[in-house]
Length: 303
Image 1 (tube, rainbow, N blue to C red):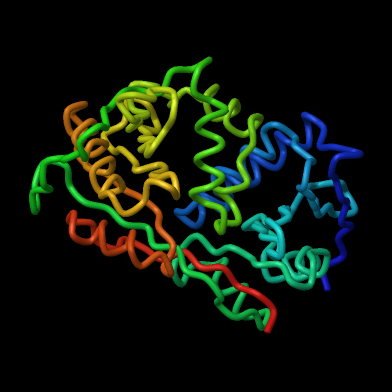
Image 2 (tube, rainbow, N blue to C red):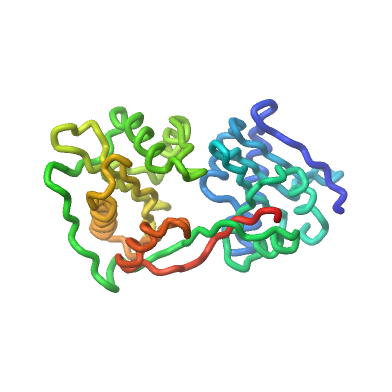
């Protein structure tokens, strides 16, 4: 076992600005070495905001107080296990730092690996963890490949864009209902939404809403597109959701196509998305729209 000290941060005490900066620098070094980011957006944002609500941060220090490892555990929804991400400084791997961090995480935790057959997956398997969930990273060209169909909305529905100051609470309501069984997306609250709206990539023009013509304040379906960095050549199907009471009307495919049209009209070349392996309906929709697997991210758990 590596001779490191594990310090825990949560709501009290929370991460300090210096600790947050050190964690992000550590994640950058790991990304440069592994060619994949060890912290996904939600986990990274919790570091940036030094959030401790439902989040635990574990920092591994050497005797010289050098940060050589970090793990974050996030509570799941009702009856859902915690999820976690873990990163070890490339120069300190193989010495037990990762195992020391893993030992601090809840017994039922699910640990993410964001690169197929990468170091994180090798570590998880080496610790005896087994894969329990798969997240497909898919993509397609916006300038070539199979064409997607035109968007067709049922009668009585119209398209508009998200309006900051008007739509936040209604979007949170629909998002929570649409992703009630999704441990990450369905748990988003107002601070999470506001943090995303403050990001450089946020563009309400790419936040597409389908609403009833006679109730424009009610969201029936939405497609939040993302371009990060804002001047990049790749767009993302960030989130697509349909209000449960509006399902079965073809709104999901229609609003997805509206987002693809928007990204193509913005002059982008590629589009990517993430989708859970067990979401067979969404997987089918995306494959029919020409998306193909680029990578598979996995969650691992103790047997």
